[in-house]
Length: 164
Ligand code: CTP
Ligand code: MG
Image (cartoon, rainbow, N blue to C red; front, side, top):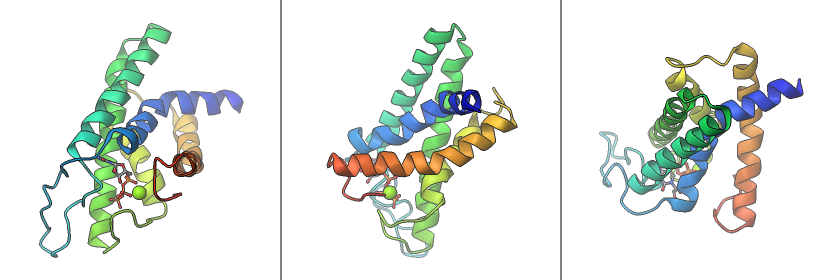
C-alpha cells in the first residue's frame, strides 16, 4: 500500500514539478498572444504564458534528470520530459475548455483543474512507460488532494492569489 503510494508520487513527480513551476516562474506574454477564439472569448487566456510553459518544461525535465541520476535509469530523462510536456499541454487544454465554458482566468473548474494535467502527463509518457494500473489509479486518486494542498500552501505563502 505505502509502496504503491511512493511509486505513484515518484512516477508522477516531473508532472507535479512542471505544473507548479509556472506559478513561481511564469508571467509575461501569453501563449495565445491575447487572441480570441471564434466564440469571442480568449483561446487560453492570460494565465497561460510562454515563460510559464518553458519553465515548466525545463523544471519537469530537470526532475527527470534527478530521477535518472538517482536510479541509473536514463530513460527517466525522456519520461520526465514527456510527463512535463503532457502536464503543460493538459493544463492548456484545461484552460481552453474553461474559456469555452465561459469560466474566466483563475475561475475554478473542479476535476479539470486538479486532474487534467495528470491524465495528459500519463498519456504523453505512455509510449515510453506504463507504470501499471495500480500506480496509475493511485496517481489519479492522490493528485487532486495534493494539488489542492499545494495550491493552499502557495496561497498562504502569497505566491498565488487564490487558495485553489
Ligand atoms: N502560469 C503561467 N504559464 C502557464 C501556466 C501557468 O504563467 N503556462 C502561471 C500564471 O501566472 C497562472 C498561474 O501560473 O495564473 C496559475 O496557473 P493556473 O492555475 O493553471 O492558471 P489560472 O490563472 O488559474 O488560469 P486558468 O483559469 O486558465 O486555469
Ligand atoms: Mg487556476
